[in-house]
Image (cartoon, rainbow, N blue to C red; front, side, top):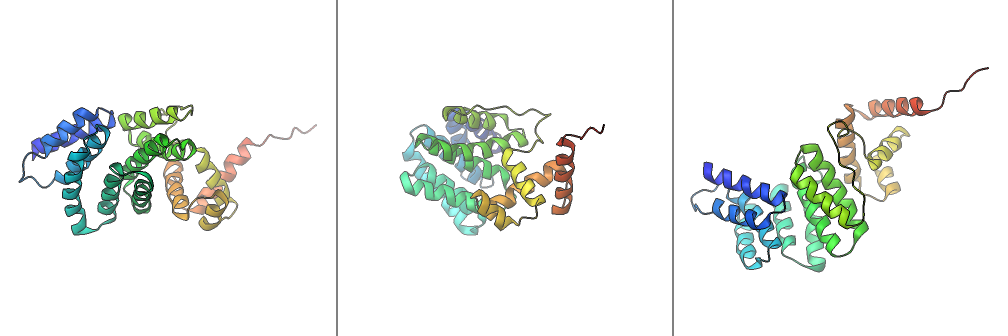
Length: 249
């Protein structure tokens, strides 16, 4: 079990660093023991991603079917989402996009931020290869923010490389700026301060209410607030401090 854990961790690291050949080998080694079932599904996920990036589709499909046996037994949001993401990696056109979006929709209401970030990353990479740069940037920015928050520098850099490939200038986050609100988080915060509901914010920004809820979760964590009332107070205080003071004669 210890060897399987170490090899799975190596596969994750190598996928994060875009060393897909090494990731594939490590994932294969993690799956060598047929009696080790604890880390097998996780290692299979890494194997499928590495296989999809190295042209080993023939190796990815049997691994995907093994993964489906595990995820199909529980039908949890995590299991269904990861299976959908893995199927998307070896699919094409509308089928791939439908599967990526299914995975994201299943993960958004959960606390599984890491798998959400990884799904947004590979979806963003797919969109960029489809030359849909604006759509790709939305997914890649979200993935980069989460990876930076987690301190996962390899995956964050992978997202940045893709963002740069879309023509976007990327500002790397530091320890000092990791709690700064993004432009969309600031926009949502200001709308909350005006009394808008999640549904109203979603309609105005052309995003889903789930996405609004997800951004508010991050805003609350970054600002250290626990309610919309506290958030409103923080926004009003910030707005007041930015307003120019009138000089009396």
